[in-house]
Amino acid sequence: MGQAHHARGIADPGEFPLAPGVARGDLFALLKSHLDALQRRPAHGNRTLHYYELLVALLLSAYEPTVRSLRTLDDASVSQRFMQDRLGNKRLAKSTLSDAMASMDASALLPCLKRLLAQVPNLPRRDSDLAALGRILAVDGSFFRVPAEVFWAINSKRSNGKHAKEVRLNLQLDVLQFVPAGVSISGQDGASEGAAILAQGVIAGAVYLADRGYVHMEFIRGVLAAGADLVVRVMHNTCFEARYSQPLDPEDKEAQVLSDTIGIMPRAGQQHLRIVEVYDARNKKTVRLLTSLLDVPAHVIAKLYRYRWMIELFFRWLKCTARIRHLMSNSQNGITLQFYAAMIAVLAGYLVTGVRPGLYEYNMLCGALRGTVSTQGMLEVLARRSRERELEKARRARKKSA
Image 1: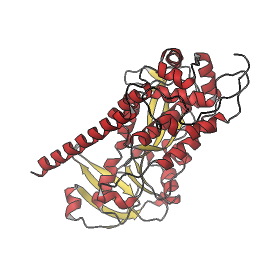
Image 2: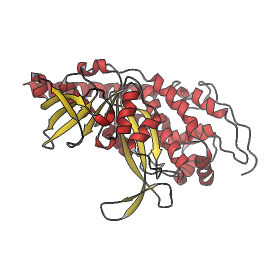
Image 3: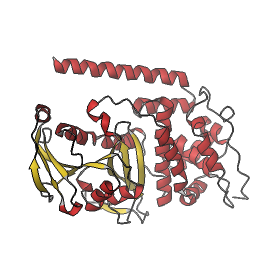
Image 4: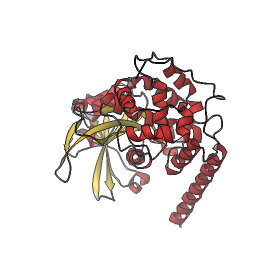
């Protein structure tokens, strides 16, 4: 590949090449300081692709539906005008991309993720029941298929009886803002979902929402020891020593709360915990919720658990809207790097548009980066869509009350 050239500096936002029609303050101008930091990383010998260029390419591919592999990214680098403008007409060869994703340390993107998270503004707390609870984080894992030659991946058996290889994305999601707060990748490392979340770091003061897969004493003790709270669905045979029951008020009964009990979970220590049982009318069964929130009304505990499904919607958005189904690397570092880049794209898109990610927001950002939609036009469309959603929500509320 020849001798590595000197790393090019990232231009001032006013000089940084923007696709036609995109004004200052777009996604890449927003990321200028992060790209600068990557540009200062030492260049690798015999390599002409630098880390910041790789990140730019991955961010562009996150908003280009036709780019779903290293080969199509290679093709796009020489055929897509908006990508050529950003990369200075530089071809990103498939072999060079593959080598870079395997060797360029994915953890270098963590400071960028943290700084972007710190910039995300707090959304208005429209639900007064949840206003005083601080950050509400749903945790879960989702599996992504990888080629059979990815030996560090997890072996799994599909419903059709065929074997496949998968990796697990472990995610913490701020459910009220619909943005990720932590992410990691697991393969055949033996780490449970709960252990993987703990390794990311527990945020003190947050409320963690989790399903039955996280009912491990290690996870429960880790969350409580870090000064956070939890609402976790538990099995009906989970050991819990009841001390006394609390009365239900009309709001609790309306929310189909069946019982509210204070007690302890011996393996979790002597701290008082609480079991709230709620009837799930949709699935026609009782859901048993373990929580450390002792002073919150039972109907709010039931509502909190329903918010856990926001993480399922985010995984669906990631796989269906952003189309992160096909992973571009066979290495754990490369796959982690791709997911980190996808999270950066989500957060930057949120900061550019001012609204949480969705299909309309994704389509508008795709157009803005390609230069087919102006920044002003994008913001006007998103504002109109937001008003339409609010009007529709109000109409449904009036219809329900009538």
